[in-house]
Amino acid sequence: MATDPVSFLLLSLSSLLVIVNPLGAAMIYVSMTAGMERETKRRTAIEASWYALVVLLIFALLGGVILELFGISLAAFRIGGGILLFMIGLEMVYAKVSRSRVTATEKYEGDAEDVAVMPIAIPMIAGPGAITTVIVLMDQARDLGLWAYGVVMVSIVVTLLATHLTMANADRIMARVGQREFRAVNRIMGILLIAIAVEFVIGGLRIAFPFLTGGA
Image (cartoon, rainbow, N blue to C red; front, side, top):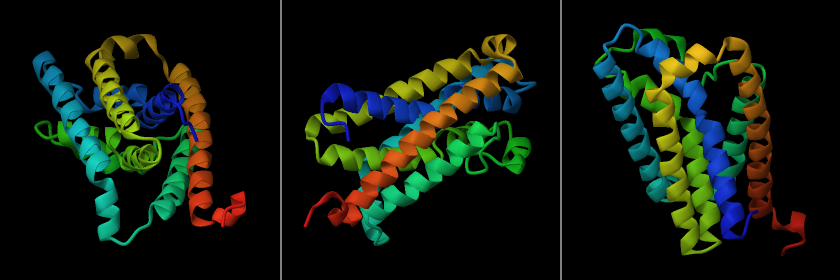
């Protein structure tokens, strides 16, 4: 586990950027806003980014409390979340749109007025994977100190800002990025996500079974 500010910042930022996948979000955004006026598209991008930011910040601050209400240990959540991220990573490697992020029904039946909330903000940006990542990172931050909480918050803001900028310029980006290039980038990010997921599972196992690392 990263213990210094720079390493933890890189871990937090890379984890969130990979799971949120701004490029993938931009592609869904383009398909969901096709036919909208430019001003409507701009407002949709802003609202989607804002709603996703609020959701992730809420789970960052209250995720531990929510788990306690349901009697779920952080070790179990790390392991379960790691498995979820591993499955999402596999889908990315095989160039599939994750079913945990957006379904065909959500994609094609979204209303123009609330498409910013569902499915773009939830679950495309602030989906189960992103929520899991935020809660696990905040749990790791607890062992590092107050500065680590700030690192996670900054990582969330930077990730959502990058996602917003990608959606705001989605038409120009999609004009230059073909399906083949997108699949290549998606597979690389999927491999990174699998590696991050394995680290989450290992961390959860160490907490649940301390004897594995020689602990009492």
